[in-house]
Length: 394
Image (cartoon, rainbow, N blue to C red):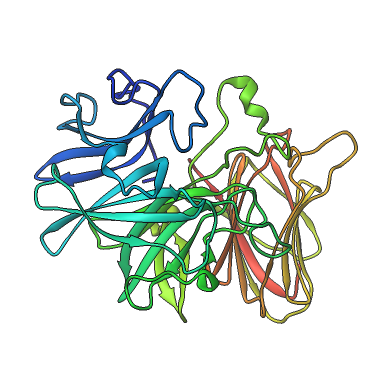
């Protein structure tokens, strides 16, 4: 899950059902075959608002034995198959099997501008019947993207990426959010119980899968759409900008989903450096794994490259970029916060331009991109605690 090889682009928008884009979906494996379900986007020419009319969102199916060569595409659902009170924004199929049946979850936008999710059921993966709808009692965003539904430690978890939530000081700080509901009765999401997956600048549209060890693994997009007016990724000039997060194993602790980097990350550790609080340390390269155990609720501060400040004081955990003289390694990113009653431990994974900060064993996580202008990293830790830093070999 940590080392990948680029094999090219196997799917193209080359059919009438996806001629304007191969949009998000999911892969399902069974009997040695990879089966893909994705949204085929079609935009019609004309005077349309492209919400209530003017576009088609089709569920497309294709399969492969090797992940490179795929069968002919089949259109399983079209916009005409969705409930009449939904707009043309229905997309991102997540397919899974449970109790001998197949299920497909789709995110959507209703005509009253309320986000919701539709669950379909099938016996053969080809023919689908609407089983139920997930929606909060009060409107919770106008659109739910990239939904996911899974069981975790005897809990039913509904994950969605809502658009249209009001931004606040300690929640919904980004333009769009990603989070989850623990479904108390297995069906009804409670807007007040929505928990964000990540409190950082760059996280959206996560999906999970069950691996061969029985672990529920989450991977998110370390980025967001529609943020260009706030902050940027300078690698656009090099032809790329986004990455995925480190795979995270999920569990439930005290009624909250906890995220921790998969154990395979430990195999990347090489040189170990003890943390010397109050002293600036130099790390060779940009990839490291920092672990800090905190002994009290005294103020804590970790400074990376003199501009990225990770701090805790008076029950507030903060990720902040402080621009230097002529530099801005956050590229417009400023501050993100979370309320943390007691700080016990902090773990920071750095992969060149990606920071993932796991607070209190992954009870709260911050993900951000950052762009230092040199190969090595300076780190200064000020805390009532002890820690170590591992340089990582990638």
